[in-house]
Image: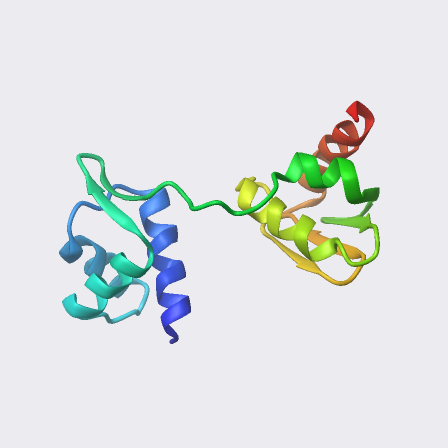
Length: 145
């Protein structure tokens, strides 16, 4: 188990449930088979820029991540296709990565993940109806520009 994987699981936990102490965090990770010492958790909390609030650990406001997805989509997105639970986005050459990163930062819960090439992005969704909804949403964005 890598540091990156552990930190990803920490983020997933604090986004889905209230975790108020490092002990609670360690217990939740342990349920997933991830052992972490208090020192390791302290480092992870610092690295992930988590803050302790009355509602439990929260992510700090993100640092500037670049242009918003809507702006990049309007500029570089050429086509939106669907293949079952996958949505394929065609972009101008050399722009797929930046568009995919911006989409990832949008935090759409129905997007499982993205994979970008030079001019193509594969958007993975959990099922066919969700992919259809994402396709309609993206086409709607293109029509408004």
